[in-house]
Amino acid sequence: MNDFGTYGMVAEFDNPTDLVEAAHEIKRKGYRRFEAYTPYAIRDLEEIIPGRNLVPPIVLIGGLIGSATAWTMEYYIAAIDYPINVGGRPLYSWPMFIPILFELTVLFAGTFAFVGTLALCGLPRPHFPLFNLPEFSGASSSRFFLCVEKRDPMYDSEATAESFRDLNSIGVWEVENV
Image 1 (cartoon, rainbow, N blue to C red):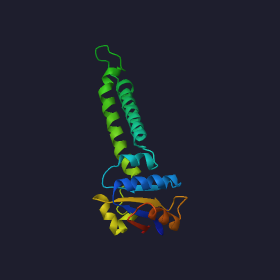
Image 2 (image 1 turned 90 degrees about the vertical axis):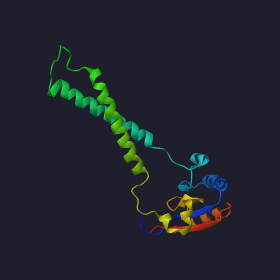
Image 3 (image 1 turned 45 degrees about the vertical axis):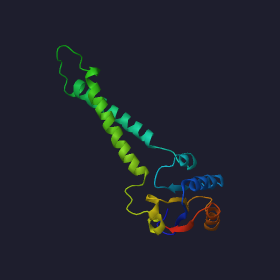
Image 4 (image 1 turned 45 degrees about the horizontal axis):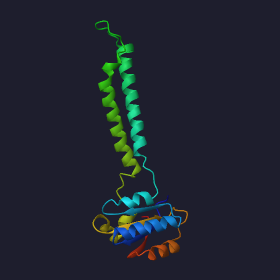
């Protein structure tokens, strides 16, 4: 997406019920790239707004990489690089590997979760196009917003604005991507 032009169309609602109904109607009309901005989580929106939570697979991959790293490192150190036979025990004694294996699994999973969440959220993002809209400051306290992005194949500024006006919105704005 370029840095110029329109970002999308935004509608403001004064209660969560109207927002949920509007999101449901927008999805029914065929829009796929839209997002809701609310002062608190609204459970009904999770089912309506398209998207897939990619954090769990990212954490799983991080945990598996951590486990593989720990096991490879410990095996290499204990059996190949610096083998010491203490008390006739085998060089590869897996029970002694468990604490470090667990710790590196948790460390890598946590790091992947943190970095993955930041990346999926598009952070750090010092500026977001909706911040240009003065009314958007209410999104963190008392207002509810629904935004259809311009990159949605169904997006047409006039048709989208008309759809929002028909959905009991208290304001509709086109947001510039500056």
